[in-house]
Structures are given as structure tokens and as C-alpha cells.
Image 1 (cartoon, rainbow, N blue to C red):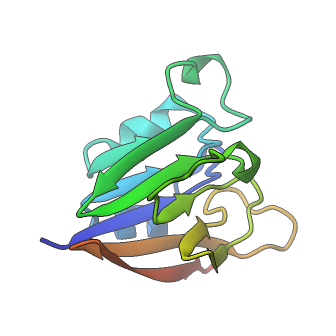
Image 2 (image 1 turned 45 degrees about the vertical axis):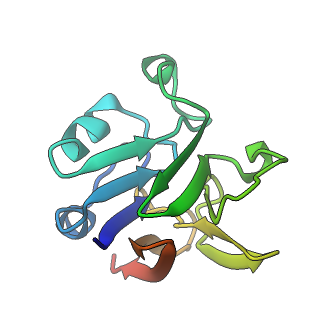
Length: 151
């Protein structure tokens, strides 16, 4: 059965109402780090299953969060980390690498693997867009949609 995944990163302590409305429609939520406050995860937990990694700004409270995660949903294998440079050298059969850190949306296929940075949907940084991604996965296949949040 198809699963809808809300992919966010770099919230830096801010969950915008527009982002929450989208996440309420998702089966899973990925957070690519720089969460900044445990309350952010507390707000997300009632909505869907959460996969979250620790970002460089996630301090003592986040010591229990992994720096990297590897998991499979609906036959699609994911690898998740905050900073792309921390991606495993041997990604094997991973189809999608999710990361954050740069606050800039990136969706790029390299050697048959999707590298996805949902950008930042938290506090605005410089004049960058406020973005997130929604991915639909089913039977080992995925489709990604970039979402730009006005603001």
C-alpha cells in the first residue's frame, strides 16, 4: 500500500502551521536534523511514524538521536543523515539518501540513486526559499514533490 512521507529538515525550533497541515496528511515523517528542541519531535509524534537524525545544532537533549539511519519503507531503501559528507561510503542498495544542513532544496540523481535535501522549513535564512518535500512510496518505487511554503 502506498505511503506518503513528509520530509523536512533544519526546522531550528520552528514548526510552521503550513508545514504541520501537510504533515498531518502523511504516514511517515523524516526530519533531517537541526531540530533544535525536543518539543518539535513531541509535536510530530502524534501525527505519524518519525525517522529523525541529529543535526550539528542539536545539543545535549538529542544525544539519543542517531547521526545516520538506514531503513526500508514500502520496498524503498533509505539512508538519512544531516550533513551529506556523513553519508556512508558503501550505500549498497540504498535508493534514496535524505540529508539537510545546507537549507537549500536539492533533488539530484547520481548513479541511479536520489540525493534529496528538503531544504529548510524552519526559520528563514538569508533569502532562501522555505521548502520541504513530500514523497510517495509503493512497491519499491517513489515519487517526490517539492513544496514551497509562502512566507
